[in-house]
Image (cartoon, rainbow, N blue to C red; front, side, top):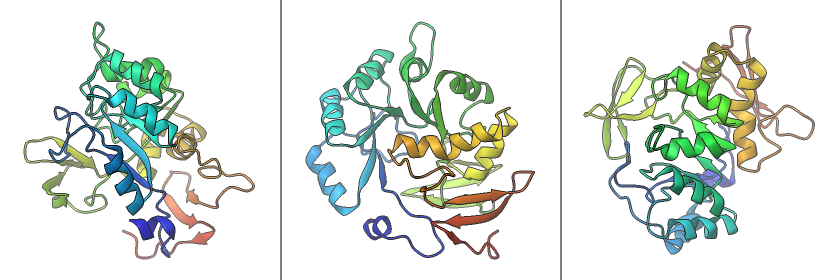
Length: 270
């Protein structure tokens, strides 16, 4: 990953850094993660950061010492998101007050919203400015997406995609797991969702299908994520910004891809 972060390969997008989504997460909210959950270690994080730049860290705020660690991470310039968490609403609010700034794939692998126990999802809906969501319409019900769009000003899309994206139905590898792609979803043998097959252009089409204007959907598939990472020269069409452009036709199907001013040959794309 280190070389890929330092220099873009021809024909591909630039890797902006690592999202460390584990192992500093709740053992009760692993999702499809391997069972290596543990409390945070700054020494371990610095070793990983030396190998490839860690830009974003997901952690569960209810873990012992997590709130102090969040404050230390934020002070060193790391973005911290809350996720893979069984924590309470109060845990989420306390973490935001200590320097956490977002939520990882809202609703999924976190304590859910209940009117007497709002959970981590409730903390996001009540207080977050930024949060991720997976809008493949499998991970999150359209009604829950609409609620999040009303509550969180800069809700933005992630694909959570795996190697099965763009491939036919069948079995694929996800780390140490075998996952099965069927009917648009990817699952472990026990039925647990294991990432997705979503692409970002399909995410945009799904948002438009939910009633968003194309301008708003575009911000939620590009601009807000860049702003969350502090990259104010990405994810927008304006003078001085990086020339990363997708050209769509009137039905929002992909026609052209331009990365850092280089047009990518799509003749071999599926």
